Length: 218
Image 1 (cartoon, helix red, strand yellow):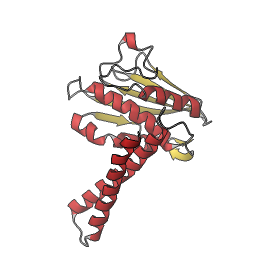
Image 2 (cartoon, helix red, strand yellow):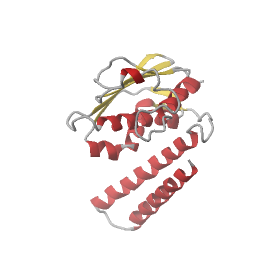
Image 3 (tube, helix red, strand yellow):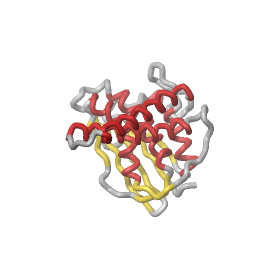
Image 4 (tube, one colour):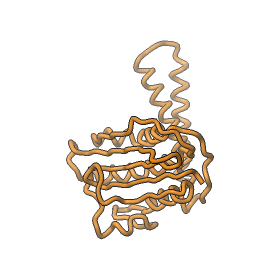
């Protein structure tokens, strides 16, 4: 894990230096402005990923993040932006709720869960025609202290024989898969939000459908 942090730290530092170099050019240029915004995005998402790395089990230990009052949809959009390059490359259509759901949460905890689900979906969506690759994320507030996130994709879905094992640590049906993503995500939701991450039999899209239930933060 530590070795993985070193390249990330270098990426963040180079993005800061690139942004500063552009800002030092005293001229207005649309291309330079676009590049500056790109560097800002790289810096922000790099720092968010750094927080995620700090929490991954079993290598870093478990610590509660500091909760803040945030719009859940905004946190989800930041998580999706982490994989923006892969999404664009694969021509995946991502549909997200346009609602505004305010709640107390540690943003990097929610981001870690969404990034894990997104990463899995993107892997399996490679098996689908590039004109039918979809991911849908729907946020719904059920009551004051309960919010759900429905995550669906149009991939091949999870084979029936694997469904009882996908949340087990180190289980993976991907070549060279580590098998920690769903296990860690489930523990975050259960331990820190008194909630649940579950696989649904069906949902809005034909592939894998997951329901995240967030209760009051604990």
